[in-house]
Image (cartoon, rainbow, N blue to C red; front, side, top):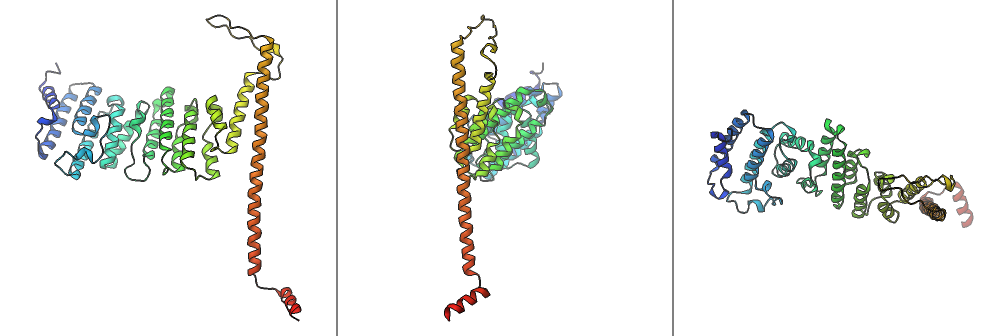
Length: 391
């Protein structure tokens, strides 16, 4: 049996030892890593499944990298407070171990959980492993991005100002979309779209997140992957609230991400009352709601042309009376008139604002002309008038 082999027994004994019993020096640590690789190679040669090999590697890495073991990763300082070594030496050891673990991972996509890969990627960015190792980790994590959680995806940015590493998430999303399996699995793409929208809502709170970074990550997911734009609208609204200094053009560009036809009734109602949205975005939401109402009821057809409700497994539904149908159509007609009246008022308000801006620009232009007139040297006609007055 495979479990009774000397290599398996040795490996299980090594993995079963408690951390308090470990009294290894620096050289012993390196030798133990080499022994682990040799034992793992022997197990792989016996035809053990890749997922079991991945679980062994995950257990070994979680034991020697404390930040991978728990659900709450420790900070860079607290994880080394109890260690007699300096932080630099500990980081160098972790960097070497991470590069070793990445090098022995099985080539199969599902051999290692996505949660482990993302935690390992976070630690790798913190200790500064090589670019080749980071690229391999990002590629493996992107394969299983639909299985990731929001908490694991929120990897801090250790080198630049923004709090979260949005560029890293953008590379993961692009790597996931480049996979051939995504084309055949619409459910996985939908999960990634919801994950990206939730991530954008968290990242939008950071005032240092630039508009191009937010826009690029939102556009990375194709529009057909989102069955509803409620999550994206929430992220855009949070970004507008956290960045009040955005120009009018930037706010308009940001709102182009939202498809008002995919908003729910609650989200549309919130958008219609949202003062942070541009006027045209609000009008577009109202028009979309008007179109939805128009599709529900045929305005041109007579009352008798309304279709009878379909018969379901619970039996035919109660048909509305003529009075109820008239009342429903009157209510929808009233809502339609309110939408049109609100649309007209919004258009008038936008025209008044543009006229005020034009008047302000015109007054400033005349002021500059008068200043130039005062500074301009007198011409012959002005000299003649001055000479005539003095005479």
